[in-house]
Every structure is written in structure tokens, then in C-alpha cells.
Length: 454
Image 1 (cartoon, rainbow, N blue to C red):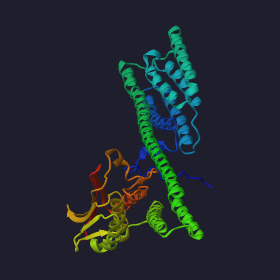
Image 2: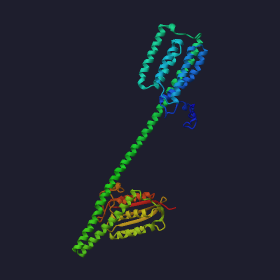
Image 3: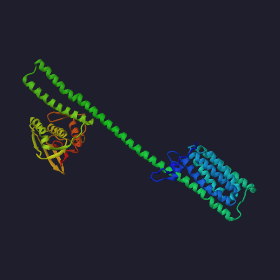
Image 4: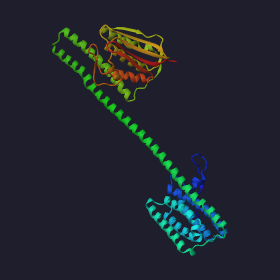
């Protein structure tokens, strides 16, 4: 059965969407090496040139040149076909030997040093060096230089070996004019391929460098995140192991004393009040811890809806007012009754509960706390302001991060700062911002900004 060559590749679209006939002839860079593509290009050029030179030389009476051209054409057609369509590597050895043979014959057949052979010779060697392995380069250079000197030496000492087919200067002129474009064309192809390949490799190297730098940045970022997670884990373990365990031990000790009937009524009252306070703080801390853990595991999603600020926060504020009365703190709420915002009801209550509890914690007996809400720059700005102990400037940079070291309120209330971390995360998940102002011994003012309901 006859076999046919598939020529569909000749009409394959190039990157710009147009048919790239030349690129199809020399082969894709993804399938052929630079050496093979240079060989294909030069082969096509030499085949075209020899098909022109063969009849021209025959017409001009240069019979040896005509036969050499035809032989050249057949040789390169064979090499090109097997390299391009049969995927068999071209033979640089045959290519090199063919050059030695043809140039040797042409040198003596076409005017020797006065002919055009020396013009084509260097270009052919250039192609040979491009398409041959690096380890052969020095060998071919030595062989071609030696062959060059041998031919010219023979021509010098035995001039009778050299034929002069040109009857007139016009013949020599035509020989030079027709021979010169061939090496120029070959040099153009080789330099163009090398330059384009260099530019491509440089672009690829640059892209790889950029990708590597980006990858390194991601690795460093992931490393920092892992270190932060590790620190948070250690802090949480500290909270659980100490701050949760302590009130439970106190309750256990109290129950032991009750069973032994060793407490007077006034002692029991003091202990119960102390345990109530400790238990209340522990419940708040556990609530924040569970909510924050849920947030970190991706289980907390803000369900935004239009809500009335005062109605949603009314129960939270009243509970805080009861706690504030125990420290004789004046509690003032001036949130407008019709103010509507876009927020998650549960998240907003948790945020405000933490901010108000912090204000109570760090405000001394007889102090004052004000809660207000107003519209600023088309946003609702809710503030919790107190005249408590405030914060030093050195402490302010870390208040929205988890800290292992505990903080104590004006009545020695203990906390770990997790409430502010949770408040910041929830506020940002609702599309808002949280900020504060604080001065040591003058009080603090925390504010959250949330979008208004349309």
C-alpha cells in the first residue's frame, strides 16, 4: 500500500492566527532543536539556489558547476526530507564531507582563487559549526582550514590543474554576482535564528526568574503564617491551661470547704461573689475563644442584613449596664433609635459586648462610659468611650493581636486580649473598620465603622 506524506502541517495556524508556511517547513521549536531548524532553513535555501544555479551554469558552459549544483540539490533534499518528515537526525558528518568534496571540485573547475568558491566556503563552515555537536567544532575547523590550504597550495604550484571557463570578464562578473547572495543568505538565516533563539531563551529565563521570586515570596509568606499560627496555638494552650483551669480549681476548693462546714456566712458571701466574677470572666473568655476558633477554621460567615442598631444592641447594653453598676460606673447610651446599618446581627453583638466589657474592665469605680452612634461620611460610626486608665503608646501596637501575657483591670479583672482580636476580625468580615484612640490615665475610645443600610 502506498504511503502518503501528511501535509496538513503546512497550513497550521501560527500564533497570530495566520497560516505560517515557512515555520511549518522548518519545524516547530517544540519538536526540533535550534540546530535542526537551522539545517532545515539552510537546506531549503540551498535547494532553491542550486535549482537556479544548475541551469544557469549549464547555460554558461560551467558543466562541472552545473553537475555539482544538481548533486548538491539532491543531497540536501534527501537530508531535509529525512530530518523534517521522518524525524531522523541530520548527519553533520555527511554535511561536512560534502562541503569538502564540492568545494574541492569547484575550486579547480571554476577559476581557483579567482573564482567564487572562496566566497561561499566560510558561510558553509558557519552552517556546519551550527548544526554539528560542540565536540566536533574544533575538528571541523582544523579539517576545513587544512583543506583550504591544501587546495590553494596545489593551485599555486600546479596551476595547470585549474580550469578557467570564463571567456570574457563578463563571465567572471556573473559568477561573482550569482555566488555572492548564497553566503549572505546563509549568514542571515544563521544569525537570525541564533538571535531569535537567544531572545526567546532570555525571555524564558526572565519569566522563570520572576516565577521563582514569586514562589519564594509565597514560601516566605506561608512560613510567616505558619509561625503566626504556631504562636497563636501556644497562646491558646496557655489560655486553656491556666485561665480556664484556675476558676475551676477555685470552685472545687469552695465545694470542699462547704462539705466540711468550715465557712462562716460572711466568708461564704465573699467567696461566692469572687467566684461569680471569675466565672463570668471565664465564660466570656471561653465564648470569645470558641468564636475565634470557629472564625479561624473558616466556619464564620457574615450574613449581612439591614438591622436597627439600637434594637440589636439593646440587650447587650443592658447586660453591660448591670455589670457597670457593680463598679458604680455611670453608663450613657445615645444611639439613635432609627439608625439602620448593613451588618451581621450576631457578630455585631459579640463585637460590642467585647468593647463594652473592656471599657468596664479598665474603668475605675465611679468612672463613666458613653456609647454613641452617628453617621459620618455615609457610614455608621459606633463608639465606646471611657475615662479609664487608658494605654501607653508602647502598648497600642499589639492590642489587636493575641498576647500570652495577661492584662488586669482596675479591680484586678483578668483578660488575655482575645476579645479585641475577635472584634477586629468580625468587623472586617462585615465590611467595616475598627480603630481606637487612647491616652494613659485619660481613657480610651474605640470605634467601628459599618455601611449604612440602603
